[in-house]
Amino acid sequence: MSTIEIISKIEALKEWEALAEEAAAEIESLRDAIKKEMDGRGVEVIEAGQYIARFTTVQSSRFDTKRFKNELGEDVYKRFCKETISRRFTISG
Image (tube, rainbow, N blue to C red; front, side, top):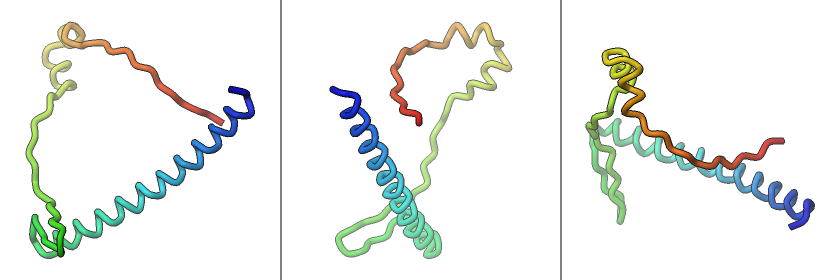
């Protein structure tokens, strides 16, 4: 692939990423409007034609790594840490 082709692909990628960000913002706006309406009605489930929207409360548990480090120490924390290796793709400019 030539440098010109790479530049062309990067520019196309940037355009698609911008479009995706706009779409994501619109999606979030629509979700927020529906959630606000459901909160206003005081319901967790709403039927609208063929659609059923749910905005339910979910309880979950998460591991508190900061507290673990503070109470048991950095050395114990490091013994239980698992390193992972990944690759990151970025474009600057």
